[in-house]
Image 1 (cartoon, rainbow, N blue to C red):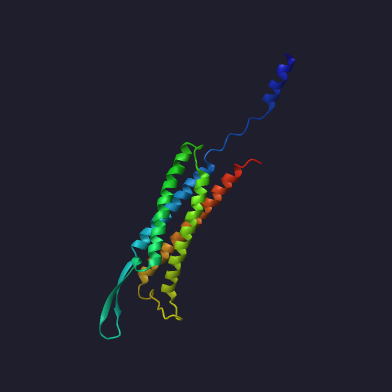
Image 2: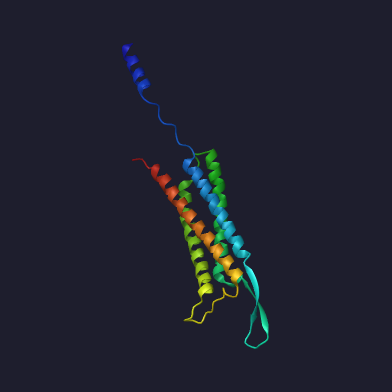
Length: 192
């Protein structure tokens, strides 16, 4: 009987295991995915609403020609809108999955999300780069190939484009943070 009391006193002396952390990285994941969704939606809305019509003088005075600048006049901007729309849809779906993962923490497909997050980071970064390059040529022009600046004429259009590209760059940074968060959470699950 003495031998049964000794383990009981040892078990009582051992500190209880720490409570499991619940939802720490999942909550951060949810917030970042919502920020990604918001940045994609804002980037698309600002780009799609960027339209400006100006009267441009032609070489034969005194005639003025009405010309419009729209996002769909450039294939890079069309690609940008398509890429941000798809990334926004993806972020909406993964935001909902992350929300349900807070309710059921054991059924969260993080490895699949990491793969698709990296894929969509590449798509989002390439679209942002393409739109940014076309916006830069519109702002500065290129004297070597005789491309004139257009932002001195279409200033409102260029402000919309620049704002949209900046929001998309923020979305790319958020997606990079999501990848870092997901990979670090997966690395903690690897037994040592």
